[in-house]
Length: 429
Image 1 (spheres, rainbow, N blue to C red):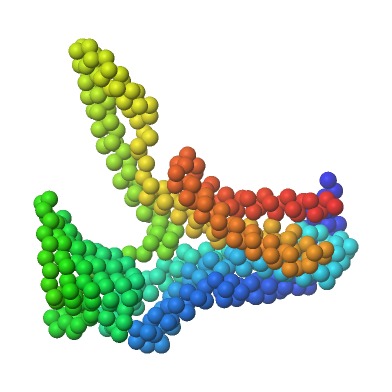
Image 2 (cartoon, helix red, strand yellow):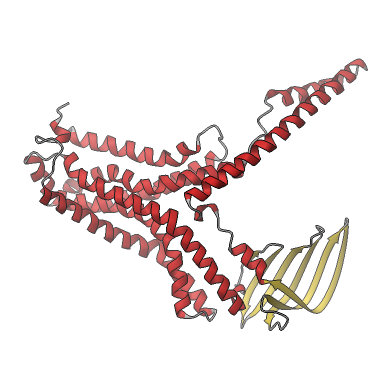
């Protein structure tokens, strides 16, 4: 193959003016696409936060702070997709204006035109990673702290219609809320001795609690209580009942972010601790397995001596199944999920760079088909990328033989391969 197809007559070079022009076109298109994704996919979430908090009499300043702390998660996801649509828009514009054809006629190859875009995409990947790894955990922590402060000053925040809230020792399911009164509520709480109690009421309302600032009291009406302890079930009824909730239990639930909201370092530490615990459990399971194995064999031998052939066949089948693979039951689903989430910290930001290789040939389609077709295909592929990632992640939790890194990077690999094929085919024309 002719080397000039990829590197041009001058090798891997690009005039400074043209380099700045291509970079400026790409970054401007990226900004337009970023605002598009922000408006289409994520503004609704922000408006919901604003609507709910303002309805709960939270000040405008605190509401804006909550929105600000929720922004890192939005930005981290928007950057890769904006990079994809941005490259299609930028290359499409250059292609429609015959500027790419003019550059190639001057001896400047596609590779040289792609070079400044790749550098910009690398910077955007780094921005996405930093946002996801630093600002997202920081924003989550600040959001939790502010929400905790608001809870202590405005207990109405826990009254949400048609919601399920899990606290440290209780689960509360609420119905509709009319004039600060919950229409239908179910409370399931657990005591330290393991006993459970289910409380249902037709209505519930917050009342002022004078015993302490850290307690929220719900006044329940038309109450039915079903409790269980020591294999006994007790049922009772009451017209009114006060149910106290410790705010520290709510805060305990808020202050525990999910794995996706942690930094890569924290997730890696979590993986290491889980691996140590899993190794200890695995050793115990292996010991129990060998003991059961020997016990099972001794039982089968005893049955053989008594010449009970039918029972012996049943024991022999179970014995063979037990001996097929002693490690098949040694699987920690949570550990597997942690490993996948760790590698996602790198694969999703890297998509900003991977999308360039497939977005570039899609942008070149503008010369024959217009930019609209390229943008439509870009949106379809962007949705497909996320769908593939979710599907492969779910499959990876079952197929434990597949490395977690391969699971999370497989959509990037597919996009890179598809882009390489499209670009190679275009260059060979």
